Length: 365
Image 1 (cartoon, rainbow, N blue to C red):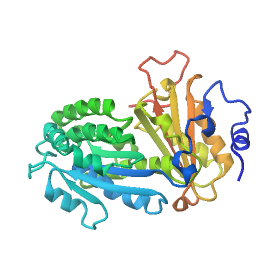
Image 2: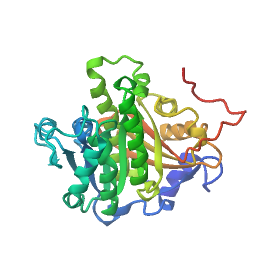
Image 3: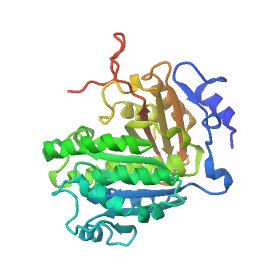
Image 4: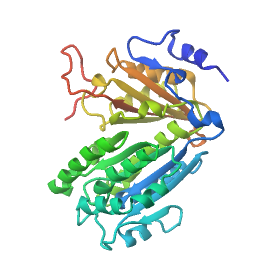
């Protein structure tokens, strides 16, 4: 296998890393290979909160069917019937918390119930995440369970020593102003509790799908989008890869803006996939121009070409400020034969105005 420095030199045409779009090589990213060097992959816990989190876990499991590491799925709810519907196959652990049989969720939309249920069961949940290296919380915000429970569960996971990342959805605008307000209050608390939070607006998802979504399938489509982001994170952080996305570099980064792209293999697929990612509707206007740090996960099959990786990274660097840092992961996945997939996570996006001489890469209509 090619050594790290030779790979980096050939990949980016550099011998010293710095300057515009500085790229941190794995050996300079702290404990970049973590437990893998000690004979095991990190232990991952995926925790679905409420009805939304249960649906995301169902969509996520097939995407991780070939994942080689130690991964556990747990869904948590205050509603027994919802838990039974969530896991008819018996493939996930279900945890009933609280004493309100009617639940805290969609129709009640009272986050205090979800919050109190977690606090009352803190010891049980602490045992559940014991030994976890990476905790990924998935939920839909705007209701009672996911919104109220997510910050509390995030605190429990961090107290157990796990890198804690939340991937959550903000509600469709048609769901009403009250749910939107509850979701905004919940995301503010969650940002202070988790190491990193990836929030995906469901209204933006309509742009991603060119608004060609049947009304009856909108929430299933939302589950699938969150599942894709979460699966890419699992492989980047805990899978077998050529280069690791360092867990330490994600600790405490706060809010992350996500963009992703996928192209079936052909000449220029890396450049094309990155073009999709930087123009992804989930990325706010100008977010990359204000990013201090960008995490990049690149995945493909055994046929993943160095040239495509190179072109992909160079395409990204065109959108970044001079003092930004790129931290990347490259991993091979058998199910991605002839596919180039990339996800970017932008951190430290300040609310400064764009310089006059910068032409935005995308305009919203």
